[in-house]
Length: 369
Ligand code: T4K
Image (tube, rainbow, N blue to C red; front, side, top):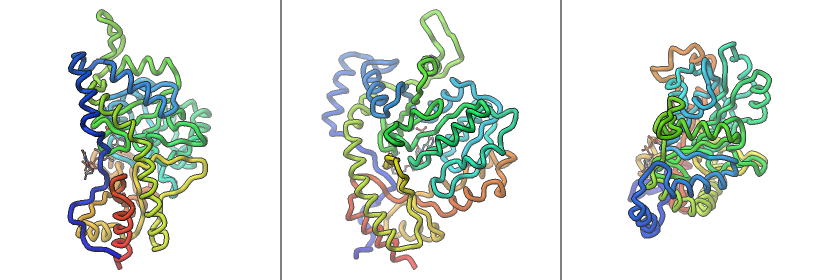
């Protein structure tokens, strides 16, 4: 048992990076073509490969995940009120606010930590136009139950799949559920382009609208058809994505090995709730989030051992000063979300961590009284 502090800091994640020479070959192509952005060949190649990896009929690349979410809301004409989870990164809730849509916070399921479908219906009003679920930590929302409610009330369904790149439900890509799913390709993500994102949709008409919206709404040199934004991914980011995508399956395999160690060792300790294993679900391997009532003490203790965990997602977005006045923000409406936010801790989780370091972190966790 080795619980001595690590010599170098251990972070919650580390980005996968290709061999520099592989990226340099792509850079040489870019230098030759002199095309740096606005839908060049790297962008076209990555867009196709991302759609194929996600097993989605259509994908559109973006400059980041947040803009892809905002564009999804605009493309699907979400207005009024949208029912969403407060257990998320602020970007989810902010995307609604930037669109002038009021977030209506719904409590979460204590097992999946995603929006609780049993609580959605009671929040629907005449102003509700959509449900925005978050596949938090890559664990899928209750997609069938959500779709059933949405169909009954004529609502749009949008998913924030920032953590869910590669999650599958019964062999179906996560991006094929609902009307649109956004992904983040930030450096902290399993698959990344340094900064970047994508939107997966099933309807070709929505894809066409999304592509216009991310390019200022410009149809051709003489025609602007809608008030769009600049959401385009550059050739440099797309080239990095092409290199990283080649490494993703191996990274997922290595993370699965780390997860195995965490599950076995922490499961044996007791007092720690592990991430759920759901039948028929292939996990993305994005985060390894545990829950423990000793969370804050544990985080401080691990920090003293040079291990930097993160309290994703504490505080809830409903607790932010800009959302506290929203009527559904009250603690009494969100008891599960508050409990989970007070206990959740994301452990270091990336392939290069290795199984031995993961075991050492488990020993440290076991040492805490
Ligand atoms: N929806 C959800 C549910 C999200 O979680 C996010 C983003 C979004 C939407 C929006 O997607 P984007 O617009 O970002 O594409 C990070 C990320 O910045 C953010 O993308 C992510 N979620 C969020 C969960 O985490 P921080 O503030 O925790 O990151 P930071 O810089 O503290 O990084 C954490 C650790 O990762 C560092 O301690 C070391 C390591 N790291 C980080 C970076 C940036 C590296 O090793 N290299 C790096 O380049 O927000």
